[in-house]
Amino acid sequence: MATERRSVLRLPDGAILLRMTPNERAILRALVDDLRTIVGDETPTPGLWEADDQPPAPGPDGDAAGDGEGDPSAWAETDPVLARLYPDVRPDDPAWSAGFRDLVRGDLDDARREHIAAVEASLDARTIDDVDAEAWLHVLNDLRLVLGTRLGVIDDGDDASFDPEDTDAAAKVVYAYTGFLEAQFIDVLADALPDVGDEDAPAADPDEGLDADDS
Image (cartoon, rainbow, N blue to C red):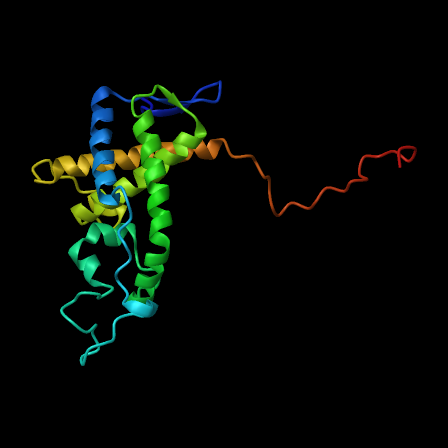
């Protein structure tokens, strides 16, 4: 029985082997380039809230006043990919979520840029360490969010019925491939975690096993 081909393997010396073809690496490079463009070289100046850190005053119908400028939900309608990468913390309170997003987006983007840089630097590497592997995991997760949003994938079950005649067939194959890689990175990194044992097991008695003369 054939075994699944693994592209991410832990070697005996602790390094992580990236067993990918040049074509696979080229596809990933294009995807990472796209993600870098989305994240940008710098975080946009917060502008969803008006002066004094207050959300825009509601209009007569309860919507934000004006023509949509300053509306905390307008940007999500303009670019659903951004909405997926920076989701509302409180879906029932878009204004509060917009303010919170303004506060944390710079840190989120800085972390994303670091992860992207680590992946770009190791795209042609034969082996990487655990720190780089964690960066790969973060980037692959973001890539799946981007691809899934563009394909209209709500959950992983949506891509189960694959049609080779579909105009999005190639994109769906790439989406599935990023999921395949992400799962392998998770497995490799999880296997390196220390075994904490059974949390429900009773604590060992420090005096157990001692002879009378040893106590």
